[in-house]
Image (cartoon, rainbow, N blue to C red; front, side):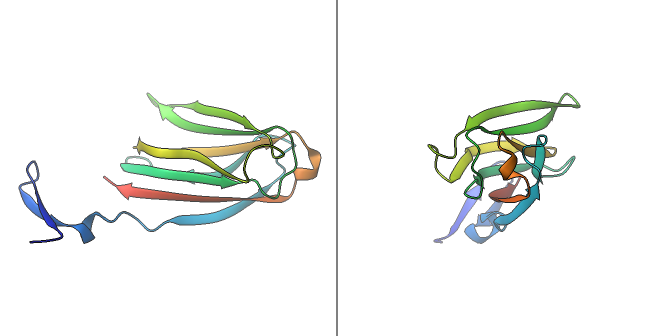
Length: 134
C-alpha cells in the first residue's frame, strides 16, 4: 500500500506519518556575547536518543568580525567541545548552517556563541533546529 513499508528488524509496518520527526524548534537568546562565551540553546536530554538534522543560527543582529560558535556534548560522561568555528558578520551569511546533516544525540548538545565586539552585548541570536526521535 502506498505510504507504508515494512521494517525487517522491527517486524512491523510503519507509515510515513509515524516517521515525520519532531516539530521544528525556533527561538532566540539574548546575552552579553562579548563579555564571555554564552549559551544560545541546549538541545536534547540525558538518556534520550535523537537525531539532529539541522541547526541554524542567525547572527544578523551582531557586528563583531569574530563570532565564535561552539558545540559541546558529553564524551564518556565529560562535556567536551566537539565543534568550534569563527565567523565574520561582514563576510559570512547571516544564517549559519552549523549542523547541516545528521548527528546522533543521546545527551544534551550545548550551543554557545562569543563575539569580539562589545556592541553585540544584549543582542538577540536566533536559532532553528530539527530533531527526530530514535
